[in-house]
Amino acid sequence: MKISIITVVFNSVTTIEQTIQSVLAQSYKNIEYIIVDAQSTDGTLAIIDKYKDKISIVLSEKDKGYYDGLNKGINLAKGEIIGTLNADDRFASNQIIEKIVDEFTNNSKLESVIGDIAFANNQNKISRYYSSKNFNPSQFKLGIMPPHPSFYCKKNVFERLGLYQPQFKLAGDFELLLRYLWKNKITFKYVPLLMVYMNKGGKSTDSIFTNLLVNNPEVIKACKMNGLNTNMLKISMKYLLKINQFWGVNKHA
Image 1 (tube, helix red, strand yellow):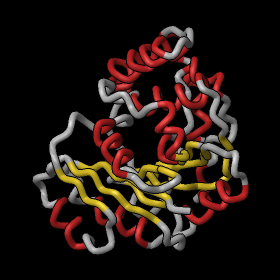
Image 2: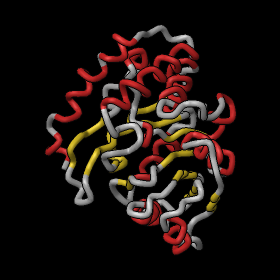
Image 3: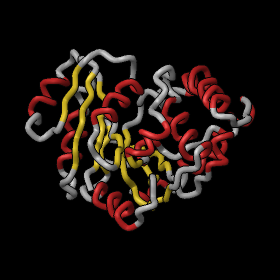
Image 4: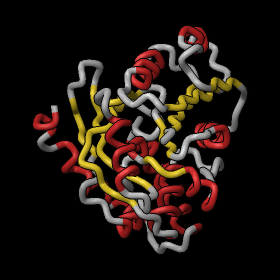
């Protein structure tokens, strides 16, 4: 079973190499690795070029943002399963893809899996643990979703239900997961596995003000697009529910 991993990147010279290395180090070898670059100017492309013989596809051209880049990668992908790895993140171990593929292999009706991620520094010291363990699709109305970097899905679902909506700046992943898991009720399984170490300071985690002013209105828009009733008060509840992500992080270290 081939699995396609997509990395969308723009000017990530300080982190892209560890991202690439974490993909190449995976024990599962039938991986199609696709990097979609938005014409980086900071030396990112030079690092990618070092590994060009081990990367399946490198596309470097202007795009309309992160979700447009993901769509380009999905359209190029030949794998039966598709997942993403952000350009400043890395897999938590060398067996992640092997374990993900096992889930699909053992259940032919399974359409997607979700798992856990952690926000950590370069020494893998965890400051926040984001788990999908208690996720239920009804939580979308509260602005709660499974961590996007832990979402792996069969390509035929993308073909059937459509790709990311590039008009979103931050909530395109929320909208797609809502459309797939809540509106269309695709099958999913929680895998109790720390999949990704995610660096702090990404585009959707940079400040509370960004979430309040950009992300939350987009979340409400995504819900409305898919027929889910919510409001700003309900969406704001997610901050209280997220407190548990900061408790007990040491047990995951």
